Image (cartoon, rainbow, N blue to C red; front, top):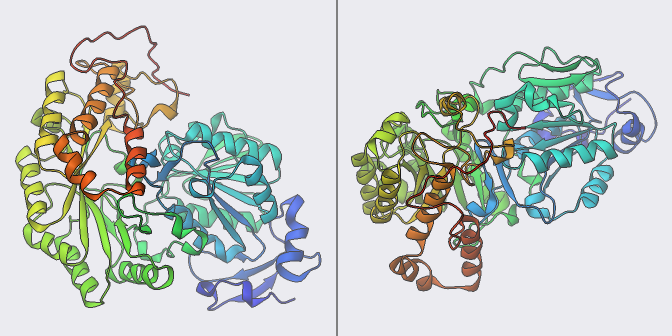
Length: 554
């Protein structure tokens, strides 16, 4: 019995040997799947023994990857630690982690990826699409602020298609682990931590059909005995062993930058951060040691995006892009040497910037750097273990300006030590610093962070649901010196002060007016509530109201 080699992905085409044997079955769809995908008749599943990340590559396994936004719902970014409304960037992010899982699943059989952020589907549309794909496994991308709607979609899928296995992944499950599945009987699996290798091993186990999952690290799973959590998954050391995100699965033309409407994508160049800021979830998710892709890996990914997809705008997606000076300089040299006419942005720390590196970045196409500023209070910065000073910030912004690179400053209101005075001074500081753009957030007491533990111990948390843990939303945390309403009000005030300055409006909006630009700016303004005063008082009044405290959301 022979398999059609046309359906074997090229990446796994080497050193393959065929063996026919019974495999994991999925009741409703197995016979139809085998007839359609392999040989047109009933029979045992054909498996391929392969070297590489995946083994026992079942040709008949059909995987459906879902970014679960439905029509009329808010669009959310669900990419690693970045979990907020798409309107916070006035655009949707391409779900590159889903696409990376798709690259892994290709060796098992047909893969479909649906990004509800760009495909505008109803649940009926989604269900028809899953059925048309004859999916064995549906994998759902999740985030904290979207978790209620994410899980509502998962529950409806399981109710309509009970024989389909449903799995989920994301920071939500990585931080809450077994608890995240406890009251969700419609979930069969959840990936805890970095998802790729856990996903690859889960696919192997499903193909094997043995029904045993306890030896797959980083997995929460459900069986007749309840919910089980396996040993923690060790962080990947060789990121280059991963396949590139399969952008053939994405509607690449639908992901466009808000300022010029050009198609763009994310390049995940590194994972982890050596700093241990008290509020940050990067450590619990990606670890505190930086692991980088090789320069060759990154450059080949860029070249593929340019040559195959016509994408020339990129966001290097990592925590501290400029941490390794020599790496950055060599990357910039190679971009120029290979004649790559691209534009790109990145995020970094204000302590990791110097003039020569910025000049090289500018020459290689960098036009924007995101800077973690957080506060103008040194006390607040020190309590957050930020390990930077105001002088560092002022110098970094000045150097970027000298190099001709625009800056996006990020600040956080409501960290421990924040007062009405420090919050007001931070707004003044952000306005006069010379930034081109500004993003403002309220501190969120995420699980597995030092801030989360402190907030729980002090009874500061005012959230009733995990979906209120929204870094791009209103505050859910009182402190000893501010109420959550005051924190939210300062955040809104910061946006209004920064973006509604007459000089700023003339320079950045009216000077480059277009209808599409106005519409995108309006969407951004709607997200940040520029014109809404809110219920809290911005500069006084600390009434805590009669809301209950909720130390453990649902």
